[in-house]
Image 1 (cartoon, rainbow, N blue to C red):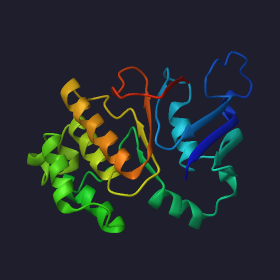
Image 2 (image 1 turned 180 degrees about the vertical axis):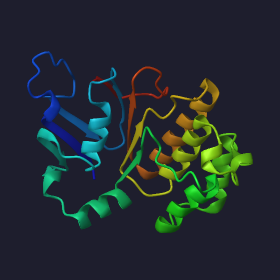
Image 3 (image 1 turned 30 degrees about the vertical axis):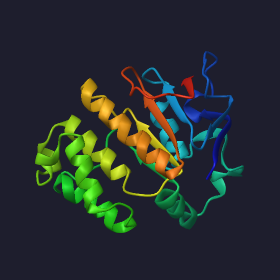
Length: 214
């Protein structure tokens, strides 16, 4: 996948509003592979909806979303499975981890499906992010900031053309935010992939090619 396009896209819930001022909604927008984007938003402007639309999780919108010129509404379940396994990785704002499993198990369960990363690489990321001592801790018993770091590692355990990270550093200090950014950029560079980050305030410091105001 080389390009994501939004053409006159608007959440159904906003259809009767006349006060929408946005760089995304009701516009023609392109996200290109190998570029880095930031989508800044205020609460209630549809940031989570945007993530869900692009991931094919929700379809309650007007207009079009295209992957390489093809309308994603036409995709079959099988096609979406391929997209999510090989082309698009998403770090959800709410993380969607398994609280009863350990940090290592949450990452390993995905990596076993994809076989994408080595154990050595995963352990290196745990060390870099200061959570190597949480490998065997249950996810439900570690802080949200620590969970965010585990969730990033899990998101990188697959091939992708675009990495979508939804408020990835909301509970992180500046030092760990910077390390997370370095890891994301390096992995995206290896895969020739694009990065789309969202924020409603504190955002991850990257060399953005374009900043959109949602």
